[in-house]
Length: 123
Image 1 (tube, helix red, strand yellow):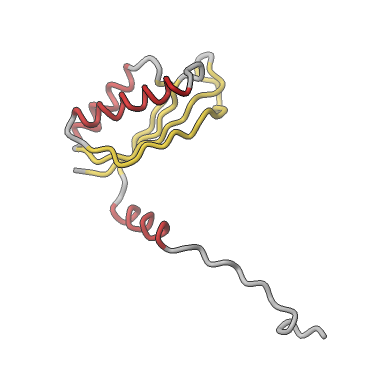
Image 2: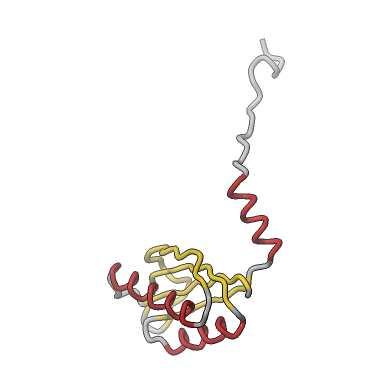
């Protein structure tokens, strides 16, 4: 089983409830192929970098899941056929990248210290 992240863009004329319904249906495709969905993040409606068909914007959804390579291929195939999906991108996550992502979530960013007036040498 491999870790994947898929970002896909849905047609802009879908309502929020329809976007949620479509993203749940896409997650069910993964479950039907024996995979597990770890996270689904609806990023909202955004402007596209270039016009696709007649669409100038789309509803972005990012999904992380664990599945076999055959299941990921089947998910890609089904999304190519899905009429509401404008574009999709599937990326297999590297174990080192996953470890760095987990470390970044655990380790808080350190604030940058500004020089105090005492240490700057000015009276």
